[in-house]
Length: 581
Image (cartoon, rainbow, N blue to C red; front, side):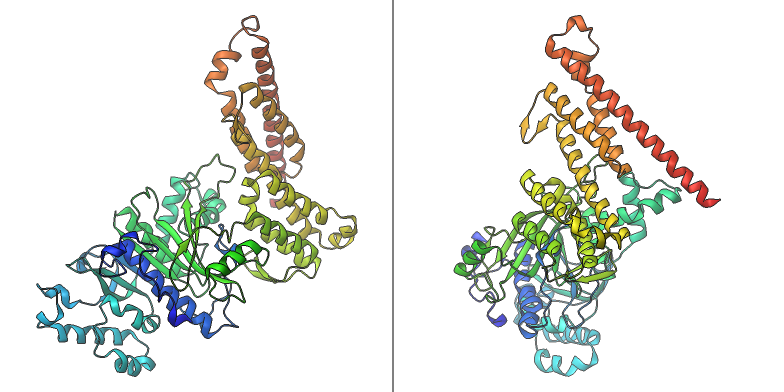
Protein backbone atom coordinates (compact mmCIF):
# COMPACT_ATOMS: atom_id res chain seq x y z
CA UNK A 1 0.00 0.00 0.00
CA UNK A 2 2.97 2.33 0.07
CA UNK A 3 1.92 3.78 -3.31
CA UNK A 4 -1.34 4.97 -1.72
CA UNK A 5 0.35 6.70 1.21
CA UNK A 6 -1.11 10.16 1.89
CA UNK A 7 -3.29 9.86 -1.23
CA UNK A 8 -6.22 11.42 0.67
CA UNK A 9 -4.23 14.23 2.25
CA UNK A 10 -6.03 17.53 1.71
CA UNK A 11 -3.66 19.76 3.63
CA UNK A 12 -6.26 20.86 6.18
CA UNK A 13 -5.44 18.11 8.71
CA UNK A 14 -2.01 19.61 9.43
CA UNK A 15 -2.30 23.06 7.83
CA UNK A 16 -5.55 25.02 8.41
CA UNK A 17 -4.62 27.56 5.70
CA UNK A 18 -4.48 24.89 2.97
CA UNK A 19 -8.10 25.47 1.92
CA UNK A 20 -7.18 29.03 0.88
CA UNK A 21 -4.48 27.81 -1.55
CA UNK A 22 -4.60 26.09 -4.90
CA UNK A 23 -1.98 23.59 -3.69
CA UNK A 24 -2.32 21.24 -0.72
CA UNK A 25 1.31 21.92 0.31
CA UNK A 26 2.74 25.38 0.92
CA UNK A 27 5.98 25.01 -1.01
CA UNK A 28 6.95 28.63 -0.41
CA UNK A 29 7.62 28.24 3.33
CA UNK A 30 9.94 26.06 5.36
CA UNK A 31 7.06 24.66 7.44
CA UNK A 32 5.12 23.73 4.31
CA UNK A 33 8.19 22.17 2.73
CA UNK A 34 8.83 20.15 5.88
CA UNK A 35 5.30 18.73 5.74
CA UNK A 36 5.72 17.87 2.04
CA UNK A 37 9.09 16.21 2.65
CA UNK A 38 7.67 14.32 5.63
CA UNK A 39 5.22 12.64 3.29
CA UNK A 40 7.72 12.05 0.48
CA UNK A 41 10.35 10.60 2.78
CA UNK A 42 7.93 8.47 4.80
CA UNK A 43 6.48 7.07 1.58
CA UNK A 44 9.76 6.37 -0.24
CA UNK A 45 12.22 5.76 2.60
CA UNK A 46 10.14 4.04 5.28
CA UNK A 47 6.93 2.58 3.84
CA UNK A 48 8.35 1.36 0.54
CA UNK A 49 11.22 -0.66 2.05
CA UNK A 50 8.88 -1.94 4.77
CA UNK A 51 6.42 -3.40 2.28
CA UNK A 52 9.10 -4.62 -0.10
CA UNK A 53 11.05 -6.36 2.70
CA UNK A 54 8.22 -6.93 5.15
CA UNK A 55 9.62 -9.94 6.99
CA UNK A 56 13.17 -8.61 7.10
CA UNK A 57 12.48 -4.92 7.84
CA UNK A 58 13.95 -3.97 11.26
CA UNK A 59 11.22 -1.93 12.93
CA UNK A 60 12.33 0.73 15.41
CA UNK A 61 11.55 -0.17 19.02
CA UNK A 62 9.81 2.61 20.99
CA UNK A 63 12.70 2.78 23.51
CA UNK A 64 15.10 3.65 20.67
CA UNK A 65 13.35 7.01 20.31
CA UNK A 66 13.79 7.85 23.99
CA UNK A 67 16.88 9.78 25.08
CA UNK A 68 19.55 8.81 25.87
CA UNK A 69 19.91 7.24 22.44
CA UNK A 70 21.55 3.87 21.96
CA UNK A 71 24.52 3.23 19.71
CA UNK A 72 23.56 1.32 16.54
CA UNK A 73 25.79 -1.68 15.96
CA UNK A 74 24.15 -2.86 12.72
CA UNK A 75 24.10 -1.07 9.38
CA UNK A 76 21.31 -2.27 7.10
CA UNK A 77 22.89 -1.84 3.68
CA UNK A 78 19.67 -2.74 1.86
CA UNK A 79 17.78 0.15 3.47
CA UNK A 80 17.86 3.73 2.13
CA UNK A 81 19.86 6.52 3.71
CA UNK A 82 20.28 10.20 2.83
CA UNK A 83 21.05 13.66 4.13
CA UNK A 84 19.78 17.01 2.89
CA UNK A 85 19.57 20.70 3.70
CA UNK A 86 16.84 23.20 2.82
CA UNK A 87 17.48 26.96 3.02
CA UNK A 88 14.60 29.43 3.11
CA UNK A 89 16.30 31.83 0.70
CA UNK A 90 17.86 31.81 -2.80
CA UNK A 91 21.34 30.31 -3.05
CA UNK A 92 24.46 32.48 -3.19
CA UNK A 93 26.75 29.82 -4.61
CA UNK A 94 30.17 31.35 -3.91
CA UNK A 95 29.16 32.55 -0.43
CA UNK A 96 27.74 29.21 0.76
CA UNK A 97 29.75 27.52 3.51
CA UNK A 98 29.61 24.00 2.06
CA UNK A 99 30.40 22.24 -1.21
CA UNK A 100 27.80 20.81 -3.61
CA UNK A 101 27.00 20.45 -7.31
CA UNK A 102 24.50 23.14 -8.22
CA UNK A 103 21.27 22.56 -10.16
CA UNK A 104 19.35 25.45 -11.73
CA UNK A 105 15.67 26.15 -12.06
CA UNK A 106 14.48 27.72 -15.35
CA UNK A 107 12.31 30.03 -13.25
CA UNK A 108 15.49 31.79 -12.06
CA UNK A 109 16.05 33.20 -15.56
CA UNK A 110 12.44 33.86 -16.42
CA UNK A 111 10.69 37.18 -15.67
CA UNK A 112 7.26 35.67 -16.28
CA UNK A 113 7.94 32.65 -14.06
CA UNK A 114 6.72 30.24 -16.74
CA UNK A 115 8.75 27.56 -18.48
CA UNK A 116 7.60 28.53 -21.98
CA UNK A 117 8.98 32.06 -21.68
CA UNK A 118 12.53 30.93 -20.85
CA UNK A 119 14.64 30.49 -24.00
CA UNK A 120 17.27 28.55 -22.04
CA UNK A 121 14.86 26.03 -20.56
CA UNK A 122 16.10 23.06 -22.58
CA UNK A 123 19.73 23.96 -21.98
CA UNK A 124 19.22 24.26 -18.22
CA UNK A 125 17.20 21.03 -18.06
CA UNK A 126 19.89 19.16 -20.00
CA UNK A 127 22.69 20.52 -17.82
CA UNK A 128 20.81 19.45 -14.68
CA UNK A 129 20.35 15.95 -16.09
CA UNK A 130 24.06 15.68 -16.94
CA UNK A 131 25.08 16.89 -13.47
CA UNK A 132 22.72 14.42 -11.81
CA UNK A 133 23.81 11.56 -14.04
CA UNK A 134 27.50 12.22 -13.31
CA UNK A 135 26.93 11.46 -9.61
CA UNK A 136 24.78 8.36 -10.15
CA UNK A 137 26.31 4.86 -10.08
CA UNK A 138 26.91 3.77 -13.66
CA UNK A 139 24.43 0.88 -13.38
CA UNK A 140 21.58 3.40 -13.00
CA UNK A 141 22.42 5.75 -15.90
CA UNK A 142 20.33 3.99 -18.54
CA UNK A 143 17.19 3.67 -16.40
CA UNK A 144 17.45 7.24 -15.16
CA UNK A 145 17.80 8.72 -18.65
CA UNK A 146 14.95 6.57 -19.95
CA UNK A 147 12.57 7.70 -17.19
CA UNK A 148 13.61 11.29 -16.57
CA UNK A 149 15.82 12.34 -19.48
CA UNK A 150 13.22 14.91 -20.55
CA UNK A 151 12.13 15.99 -17.06
CA UNK A 152 12.87 19.17 -15.14
CA UNK A 153 14.41 17.39 -12.14
CA UNK A 154 14.79 20.67 -10.24
CA UNK A 155 11.00 21.09 -10.01
CA UNK A 156 9.80 20.25 -6.49
CA UNK A 157 6.77 18.49 -8.01
CA UNK A 158 9.13 15.84 -9.43
CA UNK A 159 11.04 15.30 -6.19
CA UNK A 160 9.06 12.25 -5.12
CA UNK A 161 9.46 10.64 -8.56
CA UNK A 162 13.26 10.93 -8.65
CA UNK A 163 13.64 10.01 -4.98
CA UNK A 164 14.83 6.41 -5.71
CA UNK A 165 17.71 7.84 -7.76
CA UNK A 166 18.50 10.55 -5.21
CA UNK A 167 18.95 7.76 -2.65
CA UNK A 168 21.64 6.22 -4.85
CA UNK A 169 23.75 9.39 -4.81
CA UNK A 170 26.25 9.65 -1.99
CA UNK A 171 26.28 12.76 0.17
CA UNK A 172 23.58 15.37 0.60
CA UNK A 173 21.09 17.06 -1.67
CA UNK A 174 20.14 20.72 -1.37
CA UNK A 175 16.91 22.71 -1.60
CA UNK A 176 16.51 26.47 -1.75
CA UNK A 177 14.01 29.06 -2.96
CA UNK A 178 13.90 30.47 -6.46
CA UNK A 179 13.17 34.17 -7.03
CA UNK A 180 9.42 33.56 -6.71
CA UNK A 181 9.96 32.06 -3.23
CA UNK A 182 9.16 28.50 -4.30
CA UNK A 183 11.48 25.69 -3.20
CA UNK A 184 13.28 23.58 -5.79
CA UNK A 185 16.01 20.93 -5.87
CA UNK A 186 19.03 23.18 -6.12
CA UNK A 187 21.98 20.87 -5.56
CA UNK A 188 23.31 17.36 -5.10
CA UNK A 189 26.47 15.68 -3.79
CA UNK A 190 26.79 18.14 -0.93
CA UNK A 191 29.41 17.82 1.80
CA UNK A 192 28.50 19.26 5.19
CA UNK A 193 31.46 20.79 7.07
CA UNK A 194 32.12 19.09 10.40
CA UNK A 195 34.74 20.66 12.64
CA UNK A 196 34.07 18.20 15.43
CA UNK A 197 37.27 18.81 17.40
CA UNK A 198 36.72 22.57 17.66
CA UNK A 199 33.00 22.23 18.45
CA UNK A 200 33.63 19.61 21.12
CA UNK A 201 36.35 21.56 22.91
CA UNK A 202 34.50 24.87 22.70
CA UNK A 203 31.34 23.29 24.12
CA UNK A 204 33.23 21.47 26.88
CA UNK A 205 34.92 24.71 28.01
CA UNK A 206 31.58 26.53 27.82
CA UNK A 207 29.85 24.10 30.23
CA UNK A 208 32.85 23.91 32.56
CA UNK A 209 33.90 20.33 31.79
CA UNK A 210 37.19 21.26 30.07
CA UNK A 211 39.95 23.73 30.89
CA UNK A 212 42.52 24.85 28.30
CA UNK A 213 45.69 22.77 28.66
CA UNK A 214 44.23 20.37 31.28
CA UNK A 215 44.77 16.97 29.63
CA UNK A 216 43.52 14.88 32.56
CA UNK A 217 40.24 16.80 32.82
CA UNK A 218 39.81 16.52 29.06
CA UNK A 219 40.40 12.76 29.11
CA UNK A 220 38.05 12.28 32.07
CA UNK A 221 35.13 14.32 30.68
CA UNK A 222 35.56 13.95 26.91
CA UNK A 223 33.03 11.14 26.39
CA UNK A 224 30.46 12.89 28.60
CA UNK A 225 30.78 16.13 26.62
CA UNK A 226 30.73 14.26 23.29
CA UNK A 227 27.58 12.36 24.27
CA UNK A 228 25.87 15.49 25.57
CA UNK A 229 26.70 17.53 22.46
CA UNK A 230 25.40 14.83 20.12
CA UNK A 231 22.27 14.17 22.17
CA UNK A 232 21.39 17.87 22.06
CA UNK A 233 21.03 17.34 18.30
CA UNK A 234 19.18 14.03 18.47
CA UNK A 235 21.93 11.41 18.18
CA UNK A 236 24.30 9.23 20.17
CA UNK A 237 27.94 9.14 19.07
CA UNK A 238 27.35 7.99 15.51
CA UNK A 239 28.60 7.76 11.93
CA UNK A 240 30.01 10.63 9.91
CA UNK A 241 26.78 11.27 7.96
CA UNK A 242 24.71 11.97 11.06
CA UNK A 243 27.54 13.68 12.97
CA UNK A 244 28.23 16.13 10.14
CA UNK A 245 24.48 16.79 9.75
CA UNK A 246 24.15 17.63 13.45
CA UNK A 247 27.18 19.95 13.51
CA UNK A 248 26.18 21.62 10.24
CA UNK A 249 22.71 22.33 11.67
CA UNK A 250 24.38 23.75 14.78
CA UNK A 251 26.49 26.06 12.62
CA UNK A 252 23.55 27.23 10.48
CA UNK A 253 21.55 27.93 13.64
CA UNK A 254 24.35 30.11 15.06
CA UNK A 255 24.46 32.03 11.76
CA UNK A 256 20.75 32.85 12.09
CA UNK A 257 19.74 30.93 8.95
CA UNK A 258 16.20 29.70 8.37
CA UNK A 259 16.96 26.10 7.48
CA UNK A 260 16.19 22.42 7.84
CA UNK A 261 18.80 19.67 7.91
CA UNK A 262 17.40 16.16 7.55
CA UNK A 263 19.16 12.79 7.71
CA UNK A 264 18.15 9.14 7.52
CA UNK A 265 20.73 6.63 8.73
CA UNK A 266 20.88 3.06 7.51
CA UNK A 267 21.60 2.07 11.10
CA UNK A 268 18.85 3.91 12.99
CA UNK A 269 16.07 3.65 10.32
CA UNK A 270 14.86 7.02 11.60
CA UNK A 271 14.31 10.30 9.74
CA UNK A 272 15.82 13.03 11.95
CA UNK A 273 15.13 16.72 11.26
CA UNK A 274 16.98 19.67 12.79
CA UNK A 275 15.47 23.01 11.87
CA UNK A 276 15.06 26.68 12.64
CA UNK A 277 12.12 27.71 14.77
CA UNK A 278 11.38 31.27 15.94
CA UNK A 279 10.92 30.08 19.54
CA UNK A 280 14.16 28.08 19.62
CA UNK A 281 16.71 30.32 21.37
CA UNK A 282 19.75 28.12 21.89
CA UNK A 283 19.59 25.04 19.66
CA UNK A 284 17.78 23.91 16.50
CA UNK A 285 14.54 21.99 17.02
CA UNK A 286 14.76 18.19 16.77
CA UNK A 287 12.13 15.78 15.38
CA UNK A 288 12.29 12.09 14.51
CA UNK A 289 10.01 9.93 12.35
CA UNK A 290 10.10 6.13 12.30
CA UNK A 291 8.00 3.02 11.81
CA UNK A 292 7.30 1.72 15.31
CA UNK A 293 5.56 -1.37 16.64
CA UNK A 294 3.01 -0.60 19.36
CA UNK A 295 3.36 -2.74 22.49
CA UNK A 296 0.65 -5.47 22.70
CA UNK A 297 0.05 -4.40 26.32
CA UNK A 298 -1.41 -1.04 25.16
CA UNK A 299 -4.79 -2.64 24.46
CA UNK A 300 -6.85 0.56 24.62
CA UNK A 301 -4.42 2.43 22.37
CA UNK A 302 -4.43 -0.44 19.86
CA UNK A 303 -8.23 -0.46 19.76
CA UNK A 304 -8.40 3.31 19.17
CA UNK A 305 -5.71 3.16 16.47
CA UNK A 306 -7.52 0.34 14.71
CA UNK A 307 -10.77 2.27 14.82
CA UNK A 308 -9.11 5.39 13.39
CA UNK A 309 -7.21 3.51 10.67
CA UNK A 310 -3.77 4.60 11.96
CA UNK A 311 -2.03 1.27 11.46
CA UNK A 312 0.33 0.85 8.53
CA UNK A 313 0.22 -2.89 9.22
CA UNK A 314 -2.61 -3.81 11.56
CA UNK A 315 -1.50 -7.41 12.10
CA UNK A 316 1.95 -6.31 13.34
CA UNK A 317 0.65 -3.11 15.03
CA UNK A 318 2.97 -0.83 13.00
CA UNK A 319 2.42 2.95 13.01
CA UNK A 320 4.18 6.04 11.68
CA UNK A 321 5.42 7.89 14.76
CA UNK A 322 6.82 11.41 14.89
CA UNK A 323 8.55 12.42 18.12
CA UNK A 324 9.32 16.04 18.99
CA UNK A 325 12.02 16.82 21.53
CA UNK A 326 12.89 19.62 23.93
CA UNK A 327 16.54 20.51 24.60
CA UNK A 328 17.91 21.33 28.06
CA UNK A 329 20.80 23.66 28.81
CA UNK A 330 23.56 22.05 30.82
CA UNK A 331 23.25 22.54 34.58
CA UNK A 332 26.13 21.34 36.73
CA UNK A 333 23.92 21.26 39.85
CA UNK A 334 21.25 19.05 38.26
CA UNK A 335 21.53 15.44 39.40
CA UNK A 336 20.40 14.55 35.88
CA UNK A 337 23.14 16.72 34.39
CA UNK A 338 23.47 14.36 31.40
CA UNK A 339 19.87 15.10 30.33
CA UNK A 340 20.31 17.02 27.11
CA UNK A 341 17.01 16.06 25.51
CA UNK A 342 13.53 14.94 26.55
CA UNK A 343 10.37 14.00 24.67
CA UNK A 344 8.09 17.00 24.19
CA UNK A 345 5.32 15.56 22.01
CA UNK A 346 4.59 12.45 20.01
CA UNK A 347 2.36 12.31 16.93
CA UNK A 348 0.93 9.28 15.18
CA UNK A 349 0.52 10.04 11.47
CA UNK A 350 -2.36 8.50 9.50
CA UNK A 351 -0.85 6.65 6.52
CA UNK A 352 -3.62 7.64 4.08
CA UNK A 353 -5.05 11.01 5.17
CA UNK A 354 -1.89 12.37 6.80
CA UNK A 355 -3.87 13.28 9.94
CA UNK A 356 -1.53 13.99 12.88
CA UNK A 357 -2.84 13.12 16.34
CA UNK A 358 -1.33 13.56 19.80
CA UNK A 359 -3.89 11.25 21.44
CA UNK A 360 -1.70 8.16 21.65
CA UNK A 361 1.13 7.50 24.09
CA UNK A 362 3.38 5.05 22.25
CA UNK A 363 6.85 5.54 23.76
CA UNK A 364 6.40 6.98 27.26
CA UNK A 365 3.94 4.56 28.83
CA UNK A 366 5.19 3.87 32.37
CA UNK A 367 3.08 0.72 32.83
CA UNK A 368 4.60 -0.82 29.70
CA UNK A 369 8.10 -0.08 31.02
CA UNK A 370 7.29 -1.89 34.28
CA UNK A 371 5.83 -4.87 32.43
CA UNK A 372 8.93 -5.04 30.22
CA UNK A 373 11.21 -4.91 33.28
CA UNK A 374 9.19 -7.73 34.84
CA UNK A 375 9.59 -9.81 31.68
CA UNK A 376 13.37 -9.22 31.74
CA UNK A 377 13.89 -10.48 35.31
CA UNK A 378 11.63 -13.48 34.67
CA UNK A 379 13.59 -14.39 31.55
CA UNK A 380 10.49 -14.03 29.38
CA UNK A 381 11.57 -11.06 27.25
CA UNK A 382 12.34 -11.83 23.62
CA UNK A 383 14.21 -8.92 22.13
CA UNK A 384 17.63 -7.31 21.91
CA UNK A 385 19.55 -4.50 23.55
CA UNK A 386 23.04 -3.03 23.23
CA UNK A 387 25.30 -3.72 26.22
CA UNK A 388 28.16 -1.25 26.77
CA UNK A 389 28.16 -0.04 23.15
CA UNK A 390 29.84 -3.20 21.82
CA UNK A 391 27.66 -6.25 22.45
CA UNK A 392 24.12 -7.08 21.37
CA UNK A 393 22.23 -9.18 23.90
CA UNK A 394 19.47 -11.32 22.39
CA UNK A 395 16.73 -12.59 24.71
CA UNK A 396 16.94 -13.17 28.49
CA UNK A 397 17.10 -16.96 28.88
CA UNK A 398 20.16 -17.00 31.21
CA UNK A 399 21.10 -15.04 34.33
CA UNK A 400 24.10 -13.57 32.55
CA UNK A 401 21.91 -12.21 29.76
CA UNK A 402 19.35 -10.91 32.27
CA UNK A 403 22.00 -9.03 34.24
CA UNK A 404 23.47 -7.52 31.07
CA UNK A 405 19.97 -6.65 29.88
CA UNK A 406 19.21 -5.05 33.25
CA UNK A 407 22.39 -2.98 33.18
CA UNK A 408 21.62 -1.68 29.68
CA UNK A 409 17.93 -1.09 30.54
CA UNK A 410 18.77 0.80 33.75
CA UNK A 411 21.39 2.87 31.89
CA UNK A 412 18.86 3.72 29.18
CA UNK A 413 16.02 4.67 31.54
CA UNK A 414 18.07 6.02 34.44
CA UNK A 415 16.83 9.60 34.04
CA UNK A 416 13.19 8.50 33.75
CA UNK A 417 13.36 6.29 36.86
CA UNK A 418 14.87 9.21 38.80
CA UNK A 419 12.24 11.69 37.61
CA UNK A 420 8.99 9.69 37.26
CA UNK A 421 6.25 9.36 39.88
CA UNK A 422 6.60 7.62 43.26
CA UNK A 423 4.14 4.95 42.10
CA UNK A 424 6.27 4.09 39.06
CA UNK A 425 9.47 4.12 41.12
CA UNK A 426 8.04 1.80 43.77
CA UNK A 427 7.00 -0.65 41.02
CA UNK A 428 10.53 -0.62 39.59
CA UNK A 429 12.06 -1.18 43.05
CA UNK A 430 9.68 -4.05 43.75
CA UNK A 431 10.60 -5.84 40.52
CA UNK A 432 14.36 -5.29 40.88
CA UNK A 433 14.45 -6.35 44.55
CA UNK A 434 12.48 -9.50 43.76
CA UNK A 435 15.25 -10.55 41.38
CA UNK A 436 18.50 -9.08 42.70
CA UNK A 437 17.80 -10.03 46.35
CA UNK A 438 16.09 -13.39 45.77
CA UNK A 439 17.81 -16.12 47.89
CA UNK A 440 17.48 -18.62 45.03
CA UNK A 441 19.68 -16.39 42.86
CA UNK A 442 22.61 -16.04 45.28
CA UNK A 443 24.46 -19.03 43.90
CA UNK A 444 24.31 -18.08 40.16
CA UNK A 445 25.11 -14.46 41.05
CA UNK A 446 28.24 -15.57 42.97
CA UNK A 447 29.55 -17.10 39.75
CA UNK A 448 29.33 -13.72 37.98
CA UNK A 449 30.21 -11.33 40.80
CA UNK A 450 31.58 -8.53 38.61
CA UNK A 451 28.46 -8.41 36.45
CA UNK A 452 26.15 -8.54 39.47
CA UNK A 453 28.07 -5.73 41.20
CA UNK A 454 27.88 -3.70 38.00
CA UNK A 455 24.08 -3.94 37.99
CA UNK A 456 23.85 -3.32 41.73
CA UNK A 457 26.06 -0.24 41.42
CA UNK A 458 23.79 1.18 38.70
CA UNK A 459 20.73 0.40 40.86
CA UNK A 460 22.33 2.05 43.91
CA UNK A 461 23.16 5.14 41.89
CA UNK A 462 19.51 5.45 40.83
CA UNK A 463 18.28 4.99 44.42
CA UNK A 464 20.62 7.68 45.73
CA UNK A 465 19.95 10.02 42.80
CA UNK A 466 16.21 9.65 43.40
CA UNK A 467 16.73 11.03 46.90
CA UNK A 468 18.85 13.85 45.51
CA UNK A 469 16.07 14.71 43.07
CA UNK A 470 13.83 15.22 46.11
CA UNK A 471 16.55 17.37 47.72
CA UNK A 472 16.70 19.52 44.56
CA UNK A 473 12.98 20.18 44.90
CA UNK A 474 13.27 20.80 48.64
CA UNK A 475 15.87 23.55 48.25
CA UNK A 476 13.13 25.45 46.36
CA UNK A 477 10.70 24.53 49.18
CA UNK A 478 8.76 22.19 46.93
CA UNK A 479 7.74 18.69 48.02
CA UNK A 480 5.50 16.38 46.04
CA UNK A 481 4.14 19.28 44.03
CA UNK A 482 3.34 21.53 47.00
CA UNK A 483 5.06 24.57 48.50
CA UNK A 484 6.15 23.90 52.09
CA UNK A 485 7.47 25.99 54.99
CA UNK A 486 11.13 26.39 55.91
CA UNK A 487 10.59 24.16 58.96
CA UNK A 488 9.10 21.35 56.85
CA UNK A 489 11.87 21.75 54.30
CA UNK A 490 14.62 21.36 56.92
CA UNK A 491 12.84 18.45 58.65
CA UNK A 492 12.50 16.45 55.43
CA UNK A 493 15.93 17.44 54.11
CA UNK A 494 17.84 16.43 57.24
CA UNK A 495 15.93 13.14 57.34
CA UNK A 496 16.78 12.31 53.72
CA UNK A 497 20.42 13.35 54.08
CA UNK A 498 20.79 11.28 57.24
CA UNK A 499 19.47 8.20 55.41
CA UNK A 500 21.64 8.97 52.41
CA UNK A 501 24.74 9.14 54.61
CA UNK A 502 24.37 5.43 55.39
CA UNK A 503 23.65 4.47 51.77
CA UNK A 504 26.92 5.75 50.34
CA UNK A 505 28.66 2.48 51.02
CA UNK A 506 28.26 2.42 47.26
CA UNK A 507 30.08 5.72 46.81
CA UNK A 508 29.47 8.08 43.89
CA UNK A 509 31.49 11.26 44.11
CA UNK A 510 29.18 13.16 41.76
CA UNK A 511 26.20 12.49 44.05
CA UNK A 512 28.10 13.50 47.19
CA UNK A 513 29.29 16.68 45.45
CA UNK A 514 25.71 17.51 44.43
CA UNK A 515 24.46 16.81 47.97
CA UNK A 516 27.00 19.29 49.37
CA UNK A 517 26.04 21.94 46.80
CA UNK A 518 22.33 21.58 47.61
CA UNK A 519 23.03 21.73 51.36
CA UNK A 520 25.27 24.78 51.01
CA UNK A 521 22.62 26.52 48.92
CA UNK A 522 20.12 26.05 51.76
CA UNK A 523 22.63 27.11 54.43
CA UNK A 524 23.31 30.33 52.50
CA UNK A 525 19.63 31.16 51.98
CA UNK A 526 19.52 34.88 52.80
CA UNK A 527 15.95 34.85 54.18
CA UNK A 528 16.70 31.89 56.42
CA UNK A 529 19.88 33.43 57.80
CA UNK A 530 18.46 36.93 58.25
CA UNK A 531 15.25 35.92 60.04
CA UNK A 532 16.34 32.89 62.05
CA UNK A 533 20.04 32.02 62.16
CA UNK A 534 21.85 35.29 62.98
CA UNK A 535 19.27 36.26 65.60
CA UNK A 536 19.73 35.45 69.32
CA UNK A 537 17.61 32.67 70.74
CA UNK A 538 15.63 35.06 72.96
CA UNK A 539 14.51 36.94 69.84
CA UNK A 540 12.96 33.81 68.26
CA UNK A 541 9.61 32.12 68.66
CA UNK A 542 9.31 28.35 69.23
CA UNK A 543 8.95 27.98 65.46
CA UNK A 544 12.16 29.97 64.90
CA UNK A 545 14.06 27.93 67.51
CA UNK A 546 13.06 24.68 65.78
CA UNK A 547 14.33 26.05 62.47
CA UNK A 548 17.62 27.12 64.07
CA UNK A 549 18.08 23.68 65.65
CA UNK A 550 17.44 21.88 62.36
CA UNK A 551 19.79 24.30 60.60
CA UNK A 552 22.55 23.27 63.04
CA UNK A 553 21.71 19.61 62.41
CA UNK A 554 22.07 20.21 58.67
CA UNK A 555 25.52 21.80 59.22
CA UNK A 556 26.64 18.68 61.13
CA UNK A 557 25.36 16.29 58.44
CA UNK A 558 27.09 18.24 55.68
CA UNK A 559 30.36 18.18 57.67
CA UNK A 560 29.99 14.39 57.90
CA UNK A 561 29.54 14.20 54.11
CA UNK A 562 32.68 16.34 53.62
CA UNK A 563 34.60 14.05 55.94
CA UNK A 564 33.44 10.96 54.02
CA UNK A 565 34.42 12.58 50.73
CA UNK A 566 37.85 13.58 52.01
CA UNK A 567 38.62 10.13 53.41
CA UNK A 568 37.42 8.52 50.19
CA UNK A 569 39.66 10.81 48.16
CA UNK A 570 42.68 9.96 50.35
CA UNK A 571 41.85 6.25 50.02
CA UNK A 572 41.68 6.43 46.22
CA UNK A 573 44.90 8.48 46.08
CA UNK A 574 46.59 5.80 48.20
CA UNK A 575 45.43 3.08 45.80
CA UNK A 576 46.76 5.09 42.85
CA UNK A 577 50.15 5.58 44.50
CA UNK A 578 50.48 1.90 45.49
CA UNK A 579 49.53 0.93 41.94
CA UNK A 580 52.30 3.11 40.54
CA UNK A 581 54.82 1.61 42.99
